[in-house]
Image (cartoon, rainbow, N blue to C red; front, side, top):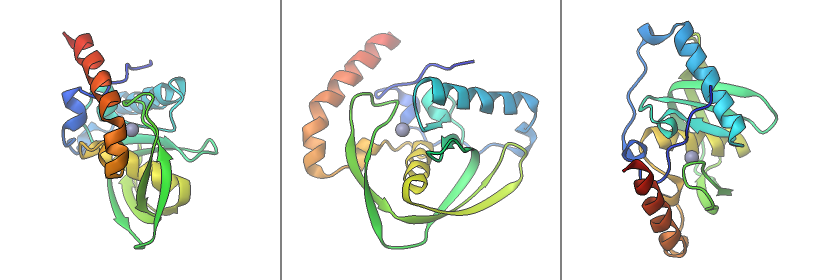
Length: 171
Ligand SMILES: [Zn+2]
């Protein structure tokens, strides 16, 4: 099943998502995660967070750029370096906008997989960008809030237009 992507302007994208309880891990939940992965690929995304499909829970799925999928639940991210990297980011919820964001280059991430097993990884480069971008969604933060002041001014009008379209669709 492919979910509809919530766009900039929807309240759910601004919420802090809730932790998934251990009692929620069952076949139905795993089917939901598979549907998130399907939705991510159908929409040409490399990452998708649950709030983006209207589910305010601490879950995201991502592709490492080489087809390896991770299903990430209740993640905790710790930067491992003060070095940063700049990447041009985009977001399924903010269509048509691509801007550079500066983020820590290397991170430690601890999360539960679809079977509630604890996974710990050190990731850097591209995957670190994707995971931090998706993690932000769980905190109600969109990448357009992390761009430079100049980029913010450049995209302000475009964001207003997306928001207007989004709100029109909800009414
Ligand atoms: Zn996004």
